[in-house]
Amino acid sequence: MNMDFPALTDKDIYAVPAGDLWGTDPERIYMIYAPLGGHIALAAAADVHALERCAAGGQADTDRLRALSAFQAQGKVPVHRLPRSPHDLYQIDILLNYTCNFRCVYCYSAAGRSSGQVGFDKVKAVVDYLFCSGKKQENPYIINFSGGGEPLMSFPLIRQTVEYIREVSRGKDYIYNVGLVTNGSLITPEITDYLHSRNVDMAVSFEILPHLQDRERGSYGRVAANLDMMLDKGYPFGIRTTFTPESVGSMCLMIEELVRRFPRLKKVVFDTVLAPALFPTPESLESYYDTFLEEFYRAKALGKEKGISVESVAVETLSMVRDRTCEGKIVLTPMGTVSSCARVSSPREPLYGDYVYGRVEDGRLVFDQEKFARIMAESNIHTQPMCAGCFARWNCGGGCRLFHQSFPPAYEEVRCRFARKALKRQLFGVLSANFRQATGQDLHASVETRLRDHLI
Image (cartoon, rainbow, N blue to C red; front, side, top):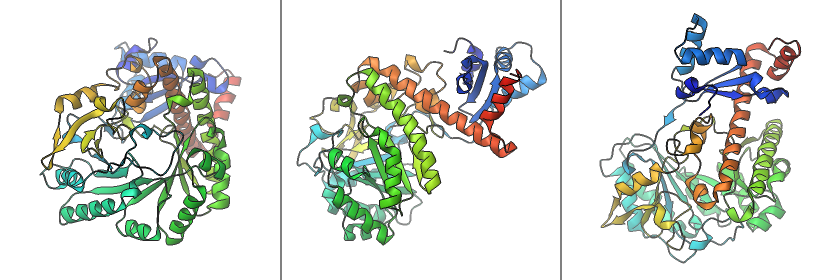
């Protein structure tokens, strides 16, 4: 709880100290942020204290009452609430196998490697549940083939599943999207043509720089050639790059390499890594996060200059308002069980029993409702003490459950600081853009002048 402004915090209106952005006392200037309404403003300390008195029910003038009302008004940003049951879920991951032809240094599923592949009867049960059970659709279905292992090692099963989805959804009003996450090494012209014809979205995990791809994932030449082939065919795919402590300082080099080697690629997503073995101390994780944040914004600016969109869901959380980082998923494992996380899918993994809450039985999905409720009760902003009063809570969502269970407690505050730093920077970016659009002036320079003239 922010003890300086408890009445505002109780209304989910947060006063974020921001004076440090101008090299002055952090509590001299605040950003006022109302995540549930999507409202942001910059204010001097005296104005924030007056707004706090108003929120507490004290005497207030018309302007303060109007301002408080504006911050409490419902905005356009959708708020994603905790699902009440598995039947509320709309994100579905189908993990086809436990087999992979890569040995990535940060692989989260290496412990589960085996020759197992899910049977089509299990996949069919999931598809039937979505499209043939009379289930009311509240949100568009997001159906992804991911790992587990490498999905394209089971391409005939992908084709069979996609065709079955088309068959059972034909003539119905369901809205859905099918996607695929791949290491990019097994793509062929025939696979590309098929996926393109069926509007299957593809994300290729790729480290862009040859030496990093070969060291951390493998097969740079093969993957690069496949990217060229898909670009020649006009297949719209995306690139996702995961950064380790060794590669995190290379983001701008990667943008330059995209311009040089893949000039037709116009979008890349940068992601943080979840690999406890790479971070021996909390300080090593903090250094990594700080470097990631600074490098990301440098790369984003360079990308804008070069015509490349650079995004990161780890940094850019402002558009995501939720009370749990992961809203919950139906993840069909190769075992025919249902996990809540695509990173935990094999009985060989120590946390498997904590994440599985269902199974395919006699051709239909069966859920353990009580276990699902227990899973959702963990790692959300209402049950975690460190989320109380935090201005980033609704955007962070409390953090990844797997992070909490993988890292020692000393790492938690490091993750929280990263979430706050990233959101604070994004909030200021929005304020700056709005100010420039409204006035044609630079917000930082304008406030700096007012500080110098003692107007704040």
